[in-house]
Length: 457
Ligand code: ARG
Image (cartoon, helix red, strand yellow):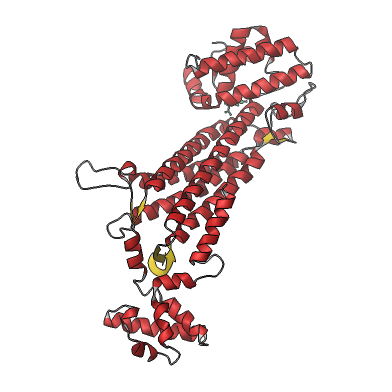
């Protein structure tokens, strides 16, 4: 196959170089975006009278035909033609003749690959934003369904204070809200058209870059041709947004794994989203959640790979940049797969609300409520903390819960303690009382549910 750049070469490329430099094996993923970019470029060339209307029509029809053959699997991808750009261009010329040779006028693969990757990421990020939204909705639904359930809240993975299960679930909705906003923000900077920057310096031909950008649905045209072909910040931003989202998914996965252990028994995952053991017949394993936690490592790695790839590159385009695609594709696929599988898994999840409620009062979890009770009676907080600490210590030494102390025993610790302390020791009451903005009270959880319902409409 004749190389599109063969003019100044007298020897044939070595076979090892061909397989070493090819990217068609992975950048064929960009075919739709490449054809979209080329179609817009041809239209612009005709509008500017750089090529004729007839030539542009032939190019567009030829590209359409290639599109069909890629879709039905009959397109002959060739690694001799290096990448998706030259595979398509060379097939075009073969199919439509001389007009095909005019498509690459006032363009380079450097701006072409940049526009392809931006178009691809715009599509995928819009999809990810929708997947995150669906996940948030699922969390809101779960929160609403279980809004009355009290559970132990943790710090340091030690029982800390009772909280509402709905409150805990809504914490994830808030995390995914930030993720969604981050992707939306990244979308803004991805939505800039580099096509027409050519190799690095622009062109002497009378192009109209704004028109191409408009045809492609870009919000803006890149303002510096050198930067246009050198810049991969949008891909880096995408990879860091993906890494942060995966970190959230991994924390959630970790909780789901812990909560489904015999030791916790807070949740049960459905058979549809768990797997068995090849040797131990009794097992039901949370492999989906574990893989989600595990795949986070790869997504972090992809970010570090691209950061490292870019850090030593002089301006403008360098072939190193071809290595940007695999990490980007991998993070897109991994993140989308995680978001999709997680949504189904959550919808099937069963909460053991009885056990959650039973354990919510264990571990002296209402001790802070006693301290706040004393504060309300005029005791300075540090003193109240000290008094409550002594109450807890005495319970520990007698191996009884806070509710195991009589009113007489309790008031021996402070004259401020009277009969109205009794409800304070109840986890449900503790939760009800935490009405500060963003706190765990039913009224505040309701407020959050309403807020997200409106936001996610
Ligand atoms: N396959 C290349 C890449 O992905 C396309 C750009 C090649 N440009 C060049 N001057 N060799 O980066």
